[in-house]
Every structure is written in structure tokens, then in C-alpha cells.
Length: 344
Ligand SMILES: NC(=O)c1ccc[n+]([C@@H]2O[C@H](COP(=O)([O-])OP(=O)(O)OC[C@H]3O[C@@H](n4cnc5c(N)ncnc54)[C@H](OP(=O)(O)O)[C@@H]3O)[C@@H](O)[C@H]2O)c1
Image (cartoon, rainbow, N blue to C red; front, side, top):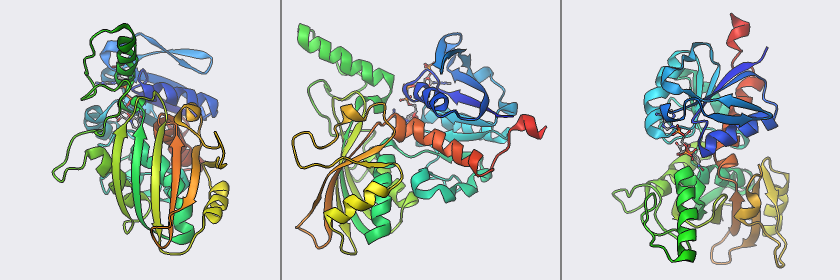
């Protein structure tokens, strides 16, 4: 007997990816339900070789559903996740609404799977921000080896991180450039086609953006509160795949060769690092892949124990949908939840 899974936000960028990943990985689901807003009721989404009719989440009863993979935005999650959790359905949420709640585990299975145990307080588990997920997958094995003191990250984030409307805006603006049509930013604050924008999410009082703050708060919560992190988050005209330039200062000595060897063995990491033309990964190549790719590993001679590296992953997969499905697998594989149908 398998689980009953609901995908909330099944018509969105992340939701569609969740359906693909559940099917690809053969998740032990007896039934998968596609939910979205009332606007999408009756439309169809693919799940493996089947199609599912989308239902309106507001009319759905979660009582006999085991897990809800939620990717319907922060406001929807804030309102719905506690109600769904109260029905005994575990919510794995992709928004930032619950990540900093002390009663909600924030999980990247390669990094802190054991922290999942506290999930039953609210029946909510949070998925990190897309930039943080790939960053901590690469940092964790290096932290274990040489203890990280400080990290400086600059992100190059694709437009799919802003949802399907953001992808349409890049496509539409690119077309407009070629046919000389006027360009009107809607979702983005400035033109994104053939441009980069150093602004993601809202500005905070200290001048950082919320996206930048998330990277430090989430890295500390999952990896180590003592690590100092600073970030500049930038949107780039790439459809899928976030890239990061990462500078790390360690407590103990570690060479580039040692880091390469450690990362080659690390779960979720794939090192592609040849010092030759094309011997590194770009976001375009990461799209549709599960790995966190690490390239351009080199020593930073300006600090005592420093390394630089380039980290790339598919933000819709490791940054969101894949990580959420991996969390569901931890719940199932560790026997932390049983299918309600079987329990009845
Ligand atoms: N994209 C990423 O890289 C990424 C990474 C990490 C986390 N996230 C988070 O994941 C969430 C979804 O992102 P996305 O990129 O998939 O956005 P998206 O493409 O804009 O999709 C949003 C989804 O939410 C649904 N929705 C909106 N209002 C709803 C409501 N009232 N009730 C039920 N469903 C509703 C939409 O349904 P309709 O089609 O019916 O409107 C759609 O399925 C966001 O919280 C985002 O911050 C995204």
C-alpha cells in the first residue's frame, strides 16, 4: 500500500517538475492529486505517462492525504500549510513562509536529514531557497573536512526562480529586442533581456535584499550558526539554472586538490573541473539534471586558508522540486510516516 500525495501548485514551474520527479524516481505513491488555483480547475498536467485533471485546492479535503508538496507561493502557504498539517497531512513547503520557524525543520537531505525529526510539531517541513540548497550541498563536505569560517557568495540566478511569468517576460523581452518593440518590465524591476539585475526580492533596512538575507539565515540554520556568510544576489537572463561564485575561508588548511577529491565523493555533488576550454559547467547544461555541479576550484592566495569555486544547479530541481521529493523520501524511508489508508 502506497502513499497519497497532493501537489499544491501543480501547474507552476516547480509543481510540474515535482510531478516529473515523483514519476522518474518511482516514489511509492498510490495516488497523486494535482491542485492549483480555481483558475486552473479542469486543466491537465502530465504525471509520467498519465495525465491528471487539476483540482482547485480551496475545495480539496486533505484528510486522507499523507504528504502535500506545496509550491503555490508564500501567501498561500502561510494560510494553508497549518490547516493541512492539522489534518494530519505533512506539508513539504517551497516558500519562505516557514523556513525560519524554530518548530519547522529546514532540510537538505545531503546536509541535515537528521534534523527532520521535529517535523510533527506543525506537520510542516521547509525547503530552502534555491540558491541556498545548491550552496549547502557543496559547502557541507568541505565544512566537515576543514571547518568553514566565512563564505562570500555572488549568485547568478535564472529567471525561472521567479516563476512562470518571469520566464515569459524574458522570452517576450528578447523577442521585442529583435523586432524593435517597446520593452516594458512587469515582473522584474528593470529590463532583463540582455541585462543583469542586482535585486531579487524586497530591500531590507540594512540595504541587503531579502534573497541575500535568506542565503545567510538558511546556511546558518542548516549547516552551522557560527559560519559567517555574505551574499550578493543577481538575476541574469538565463531560463533555468542558478550559478554561484563562492569564496570560502577555512579554519584549517585545505588545498584545491583536496577539495576536489572530497567533493568527488560527496552526495549530490559532481565535480567537472578541467583547466581547459569548456572544462566547467554552465547553467544551460545543468537544466534537467539532479546534481550540484562544482567547477573552477582554486586556492585563494589573499587569505590564509581560502578557496574559490563555481557552483551550478537546476534551480527547479535541486533548488526546489527534487529537494522536496528527497525530503518526502526521507520521511518514507525512515518510517516516519505510514500511509493513512494502511493505518485505517
Ligand atoms: N522557481 C524556483 O526556482 C523556486 C525555488 C525554490 C522555491 N520556489 C518557491 O516555490 C513556489 C512556487 O514557485 P513557481 O516558480 O512554481 O511559481 P509559478 O510557476 O508562478 O507557479 C505558482 C503555482 O501556484 C499556484 N497557485 C497560485 N495561487 C494559488 C492558490 N490560491 N491556490 C492554489 N494554488 C495557487 C498556481 O496555480 P495557477 O496556475 O492556477 O495560478 C501555480 O500552480 C514559490 O513559493 C516559490 O518561491 C521556487
